[in-house]
Image (tube, rainbow, N blue to C red; front, side, top):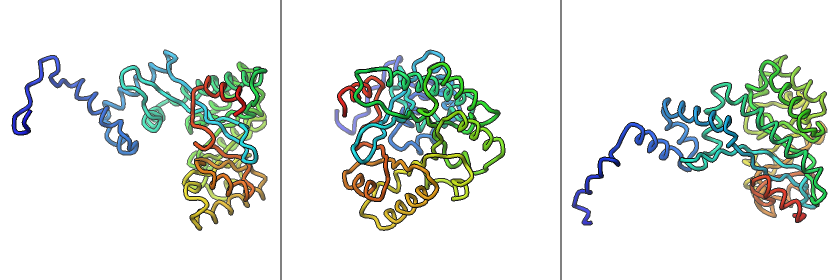
Length: 303
């Protein structure tokens, strides 16, 4: 059709309606830039997505994928991080960077967090009981939200998940963001101390991008620091990043904290981190997030 001719009018069934316009806006919003997408969603669309997310939780259609965490010395799986996924029946895969902030505006995130804990601990408990697996990740890591920390909810959810799954507490690690811990309130400290008393590990996620100070590392009952991928991306060629990573590794060693480097994608990055004493890492070099069955197949093959 020549460019100067108007497009033929669409049949009535394809005419724009408020519902189709809303869907079109959401489709446009679900584009590569998650920050931009999040900003483009109207209040009505956020509410609709929140309702659909609640329905997905109740229907059992949310899923967990797992990204292996490895020891840098030999590349063997020593852990796995549980990552929430949502495949919408009409909209396809909706990025966590879009739907999790929506869930965090309500108590829905608390319900989702409880489900993730139960599902991840149940899955991890089965790893050790499967004699076919040549590698068994020692730890399953689960991200938790600030809302779960309030009112003792997280402590109850962790205890319930461990009891139902039978997973030894030392094989569960909770990942907390710096923004969740910056206030250091008494309730937060008591909750985290009680969780550590259960034997569960606590990791500070995305270290270096938030507000945590060195006093936070000293005050909180942490056992692991997860170094943000922003400091790993340009290793070992960026002088500032190499200096920062060396400093973090040195501080962590002095405080008897383990460092896990995130976002490792190249052999040069792996070699540098290993040479400075970093023991564990995760990233595309070792494996992308995948469904539980894919992880089990990888563990059965030994790599």
